[in-house]
Length: 118
Image 1 (cartoon, rainbow, N blue to C red):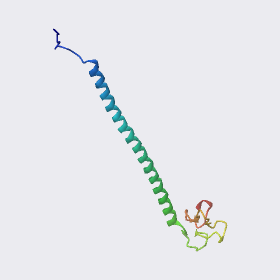
Image 2 (image 1 turned 180 degrees about the vertical axis):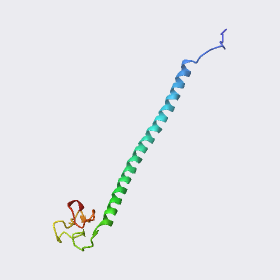
Image 3 (image 1 turned 45 degrees about the vertical axis):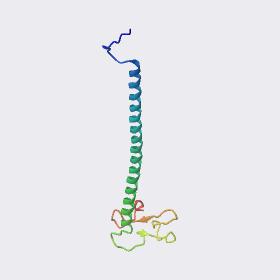
Image 4 (image 1 turned 90 degrees about the vertical axis):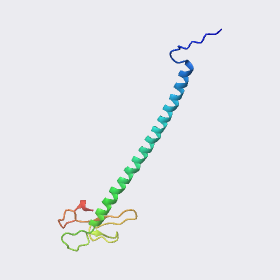
C-alpha cells in the first residue's frame, strides 16, 4: 500500500524549471521589443536631424537669395548682386563657377562692399 502525502509544501524541481523557462521566454521577448524600438528611435532621430539641417540650410539660402544685390545707397554699381565669371568690374565682383555661385550684398549698409560681404 502506498501512502499519498496531501500536505506537501513548496514546489517541485520540474515546476521550478518550467517557471524559469517561461519567464526567460517572456523576458527575451520584452528585450527584443525594446531593442527594436530603440533602433527605430535612433533611426528616426537621425532622419529628424537631417531634416532639421536641410531646413536650416534652405532657410539660410532663401535669406541670402532675398538679400542678393541689396544696395542701400542705390548707387547702381555692378559690384552688388549675381554676376558672370567673365564680367569682373572690380576685384570684389561676384564669381559663378560650375559648382558654386557667389553673390554680394551690402550687409552692413555702408555702401561699400567689404571682404566679408561675399
